[in-house]
Amino acid sequence: MTERPATRVDRGADHFTVGPSGLSWDGDTLVIEIDEISAPLPYRVRGTVRVSPEMIGTTAFALDPAGRHRWHPVAPRARVSVEMTHPGVRWSGDGYVDSNFGEEPLEDGFDDWHWSRAHLKNDVAVLYEGRRHDGAPFDLALKFDRQGRWHDVVQPAAAALPRTGWLVKRATRADAGHAPRVIKTWIDAPFYARTALATRLFGEDVAAVHESLSLGRFRSPIVQSMLPYRMPRAFW
Image 1: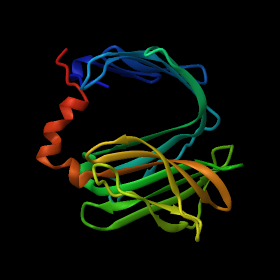
Image 2: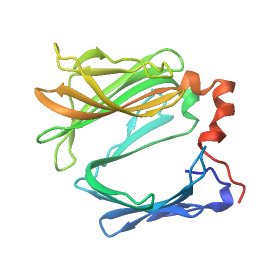
Image 3: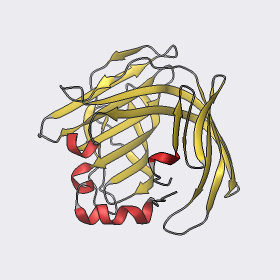
Image 4: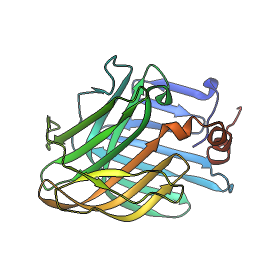
């Protein structure tokens, strides 16, 4: 996506747009229209993503004692269809929508975190842990049923993952005695990694989506100077 000035942002009860791209609700479906130029190699990225939630989560969780940072699993389980014209690709599958929001930048509140989500047979498991900027740990381990109801569960055992090409530390959770396996690293950036895992959680063999975020690295002036090459900044 492209960073744009406030004059190119429009937000209402059922839509949010930034420049030529935006999100809106069409009945029970979230429609995401994408019209961007990629970076660092400039080429057109255009298409439509439709997200149809199977459930809506109604609870936002505080990630710090003061409640400055909150995480809302908006649609813990959804069906997603992607129709891209540039490049010409399409696919569909299971999906998930969440939101982080708060009263200060993430890098002011945290040093790192690790998050993962897996669709179980009947539930969705979401595991979240990390360190706040003051060094205090935090963690959440939740299951969501098909009605969107959630309950706390005991965090599975800690499990190590290999570092990324940028040497970002990755960590996750899995049933005791099971070693998760990296299937593919989708994003390998200086401060962030998104990964597909084969793992075992709560007695089920599952495919999980995993992310690791190093906000200590993100704060680095060197990394900050690299950001415009990955996320363009427009002034119109």
